[in-house]
Picture 1: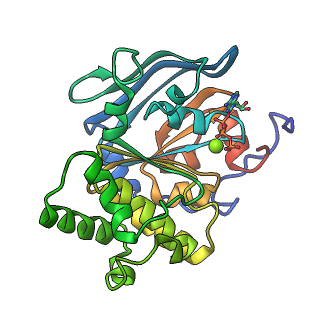
Picture 2 (picture 1 turned 90 degrees about the vertical axis):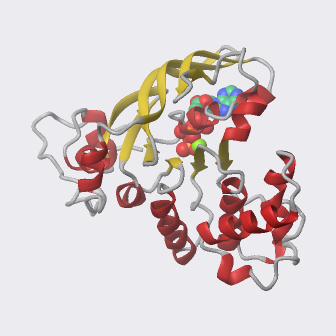
Length: 285
Ligand SMILES: Nc1ncnc2c1ncn2[C@@H]1O[C@H](COP(=O)(O)OP(=O)(O)OP(=O)(O)O)[C@@H](O)[C@H]1O
Ligand SMILES: [Mg+2]
């Protein structure tokens, strides 16, 4: 990390090529919107190693929240807390709360079944990971797991999800073909459709475009922008232009700490913390 003297001229994000969020007005209006969740004094430990330190921030309902910060700062760790992925490995420990509304339950509490949390909060990873099955079966899988067997209902839901994931037109005539025959960008949209099918309350996206070319990336970005009509999204990205383009709110993390959270346009144009300014203007990270 480079030290910057206090008297150094401030480089505004626009000068660094970061466009202001198109959603700025909407985001401002949304500041008082209902919350889908709230992270409260959350710490997380991989055995003895503390990876999250007393993190607190809100997740506004049906908006896109971007998580940004330098490599190793804890973005993926935080995202994985939301669907209790860490429970799959021994020695991991949560401290604090992630309150899910409207029920107001603490989803990282040991009293809450991780399977229930995973049914309600879907996740899409950096690398597309379709099952070695047909396109149709990939999307229907999450419905079958939930006991939904009615053929007509499953068909309708598969189509709805593929439409929402902007993939329907490309695959509607080949639903029975293997998902492995799709391009990387199509596979990632398929994974998003798979996550959307069971109607999750929240969708977690961990760098969903980092393995994709610019065209596939812009398709996913368009898709994420429209998804907040139906689901609350948290997206991790290293691409600050992407965060500025598609998110309503942004949270900046640094070494396990939540440094700054706010309306995306404000955070990118007028950050309150020097670490945020240094990061968004490319001085470190
Ligand atoms: N399974 C693990 N066991 C121990 N430490 C881990 C484990 N996974 C991650 N960490 C550590 O936790 C910290 C946060 O890692 P994390 O993967 O959440 O960072 P990140 O912000 O997602 O980084 P990147 O941008 O590179 O994906 C790092 O110091 C990392 O080394
Ligand atoms: Mg990560």
